[in-house]
Length: 201
Image 1 (cartoon, one colour):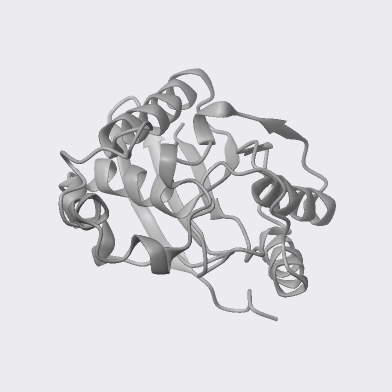
Image 2: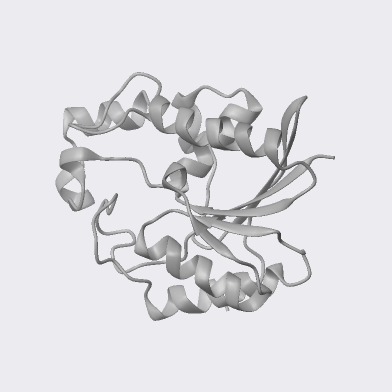
């Protein structure tokens, strides 16, 4: 039997659209984000989730907790789902990054660029892809929600579809969105991408 993965991006948080939050501590969901997370939980009622795994970041854990409350599913924290380590860019406002050569290179050439003092996109993609491979081998037939971050979901989708990491910005992963992947010993395939209907209430 195949593993069913529900890829959940965390809901909107206090830095959303303003700063590159990365792994910065103390960034909670906004009231809007809390509503998004609760709506996401309602969306997943009836999916018979086996487990919710979440990034250790506060915004991801809060989203996971809302889904767990709605579905009655246990949560575990997984470092494999953590946000990209953005190094010196962590917590920097986007307005300050715009026009910097290293930032422009990061967004144009994700396959080769590296964050200053942090991870490369390839390393982050390897991290989440290896985690999913392990789940597919060890837990066939289960239905697991992975609460993580925009570019981590993009990286996993790109790896699944065989897309170059340079093309990550060509598709959207919205806050509190749901994407689905099915995985087994044969590999993996994308079932849906960026489902948001009914999650912004």
